[in-house]
Image 1 (spheres, rainbow over the protein chains, first blue to last red):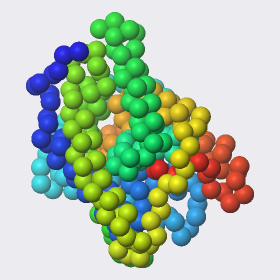
Image 2 (cartoon, one colour; image 1 turned 90 degrees about the horizontal axis):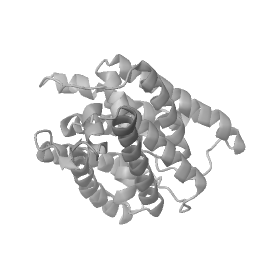
Image 3 (cartoon, chains in turn cyan, orange; image 1 turned 60 degrees about the horizontal axis):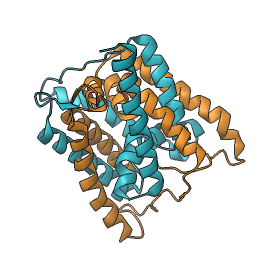
Length: 145
Length: 151
């Protein structure tokens, strides 16, 4: 392993993380809810009318973030390696997997670790592990790079 | 009721701005964190550190209160079981995350920034979640999903 110092952005990443934490705090302390994205989306499928509004409001705010950002600054570049078939396959697996796991990077990784939940610690170790392994296989075994 | 919508919308917006600032709306940067065998970019670990530092303070405040500021009960996960669903689900999620470098939050930010690939990812992700709902939603008479609700 070699650290890529040219790409490493410790301070903006720490600040961005703190903003994510602030968003978690807001939803928790005002609404009493966990800011877990897969759960907020997945809960829409239960079609409980009284439980839809805050989910839609949160997700609208999330998707509006790039528009709000562009009011003040240019969006940072986005690099997506995979093609459309990879996106479709990955999206399907992420949708199914996060619902079976009851959480993703936000629900388990941020909120769960903040609560020191044993379930979330286990989930985070597992998805980080298979994430590392998948990238290793794709980049260094399949593509031999 | 209205206050809760405003707070939820603001929370989503701040969450998304945080993802963009952190560099996590760029799948290339996420994959650079997951690529231990290449030129490793540890930034994502700092995102987690910042988020957990603020997040754990928020949960500490919540533990000291019976209800939220709007008087809602805290809807926190109660399940403690590390079961097969949790492990296999996380295992699959990690594979998808490693394939695309995209997880659910950044996926919606990508859609908001007009990314066609982001849109395909989100459409497939919604299909996966719908599939889960069809397979598991009817197991319970109340239509709720068994297991935890960490999000």
